[in-house]
Length: 421
Image (cartoon, one colour):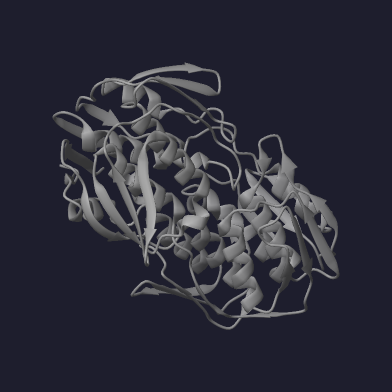
């Protein structure tokens, strides 16, 4: 397995372009299964998860080509309806084929999904929503088996103990596009990625209103066609590079960055002491390295995203004072704490909250990545740490960051990918 070797202490400075959003790309690729004819997705990032999704769609009868940042998807065989464990276990978003297969092919057999080890992420809300549409759901050998001759519109509540479900909303809205009648989703996820999916489905001929609000209405149609769609910028990648500029006392210009998707993050960074401003078609992030402690709680959009919790923690390790980070989406998502402690951080975990006491410096050390966003946090810590840091198992970061070491090197970081010996 590859690893990163990073020599800290370099101030990041320069300009990079933010890639298309991974969390928008994967459900949109799955949604292409609903259409008759080819679909083209522009600005698709070159990520392991995108490649895994392409392989999964290929197993489900689609021809998928990736070329020059575009993904072409066309269904040529609708006889398959089984998304096997070997495909789905690699990523959580594999569950997104459940709704399209059920709606278009009247049956779906999808293995329970895998992904990062960040705590329990049950799919009960997905199944509740599909049952409300009239699907018969069974579990067989670790697979979800769903059948329905024709789905029927319904009023569905998708709220859960930790808020709305993003992939559950995606699955139910995709299935509802071909259902008979009207579906209303209450407590729908409001994330920009859901809005992007709704725009793609609308381009395919779906009738959707209210996307981006907690109440979404879908009028079922008889048929969908292929469409073209340009992905939104990846707000998590953008937020990660903002924090990279902040933690290294740098100045980074971000192209293809939507500040309106990052208001909670920008507000918190400014509170810490980071300068974030739009400048024409770029966003400028700069730090004078006088970092103030702060408290933050992760929440569903438009709140502070759980996918940037680990990265912010790395930054607050160097802030002046005590910070409290409370995780309300995935309360167990603190596996990066032990690795940051190895680098000299001062962090105390108390249930779903981590108390971070700022230290003068971090020290390079061998560390192990446990999941996608924890990997990013360790890279950020390594960029500013004194000495050299080796990060093992960076295949996690390849799932969600398109050539992160290339972009960091362009900004002046000293980072090397080392293959398995």
